Image (tube, rainbow, N blue to C red):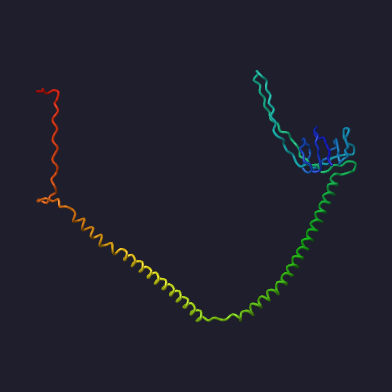
Length: 264
C-alpha cells in the first residue's frame, strides 16, 4: 500500500517506513504528526483518488529531527551600472518517517506486521525442520560408524592370530651363523676380484710380448741405413779447416756522365 501526500506545497509518494525531508514544521524530534492532505491511496489493484483529497484517509508520521538543505547561490547584476548582488540560502527542513497509512479503517502498518509475523513464523518453522534433519543425519552417521567398527574388529583379530601362528614356523638364525655367512660372501667376492686382476695382467703381458716381437727385426736396418748415409757425405773442408771459398764480388758499374761536366 502506498499514498501520495501534500506537505509544504509539494507532493510525495510514500509507503510505510519511508523517510523524507519536508519544509520546516514546528515539532520536536520524537513527536507524531497526522497529515490530512492525502491525494491518492493505492492498495494492490484498487486505488482511491481524492477530489481533491481522499475521504477517511490519513497518514501518520514521526519527526526525526531538523536539517538544512544544500546551499543555493542567488546572484543579481545590472549591466552598465556596476551593480552586483550575491546571496546564499540554505532551506530549513524537517526529516520525518511514515509510520502508518489508514484508509476506511484499514491500516498498512497492521498488514505489514502480520506479513512480518508470518515470515518470521515460516523462517522459524524452516529452522526447526533443518535442526531435526541435522539430528537425524548425525544419528544415522553415528550408527553407520558403529557398524563399521564392529565389522572391522573380527578381521583384525584373525590377522593377528594368523601372524602369531606363522611366527614359530620361521627358523631362528643366530648371530654366529649370520657373521659366518657374511665372511664367506666377502671371501668369495675378494677371490673373484683377484682372478679378474690376474687375467688382466696376463692379457697385458701377452700384448707387450707381441709388440716387441714385431719391432725387433726393424732395428738393424735402421742402423745400417744411417751408417751408409754418413759415409756417402764428401769432405768439403780445406787445409785450414774452413769451408769452400766465397764467390767473387760483382764488378762495379760505369759512372754515368753528368750534364754539367764537359765531355771529351
